[in-house]
Amino acid sequence: MALELTPIDRGLVLVISGPSGVGKSTLIAHLRGEVPDLGFSISSTTRAPRPGERDGVDYHFVDEARWAADAASGAFLEHARVYDHGYGTPRAPVEEAVAAGRSVLLDIDAQGAAQVRHTLPEARHVMIVPPDLETLRARLLSRGTESEATVARRMALAREQLEAAPAYDYVIVNGNLAAAEAQLVGVVLAERARPARQGRVLDRLLGAADR
Image (cartoon, rainbow, N blue to C red; front, side, top):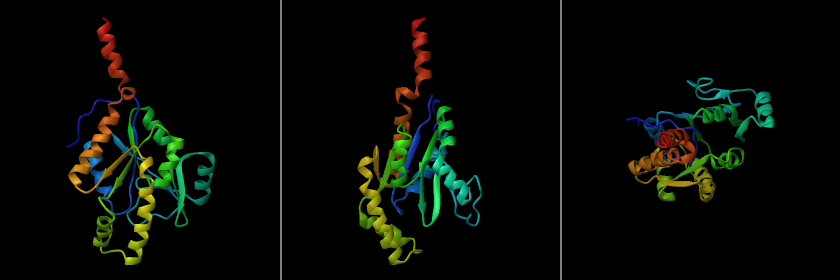
């Protein structure tokens, strides 16, 4: 059930990263169900839409020229090329939401998160990790959709992601799902409680106290 939360002055930008198979999507879905005003950043990409995907809902589908121009002009908070396709997080919608007191979630990898630390230093970063690498490998294999070679490649990428974990503000171990869900919600609630985000409440209280 969604929590009833006091509005905040300036929105939170929450970056969530984690290796494939760690359960990140499940945790994000729970978080968004608990925190109703937590928006989700829609990335731009040059790849073609997959069946069922909608422009402006799943991604902003753009051509190579538009993507390259946006990357060169600084219109992205972070961007990268993956498997010959460009991906990027548009800057303007995130900054507008934050200024209006709305929080935004970015689901990006460690490479993108490193860029966001420079382009938006106020963002908070959470890395979701498995309890151990064998558990992660077992989760990947349990999907039944990936070959041993693909799993091996994903495990190598997972190690690269995990090496970046010390640079994050929070690390959540997804061994027990309920505990991991509670921790992630707790991170958002704690960040919302920072004095810089509660200026209107404090001004009202202090103003009343002066009367």
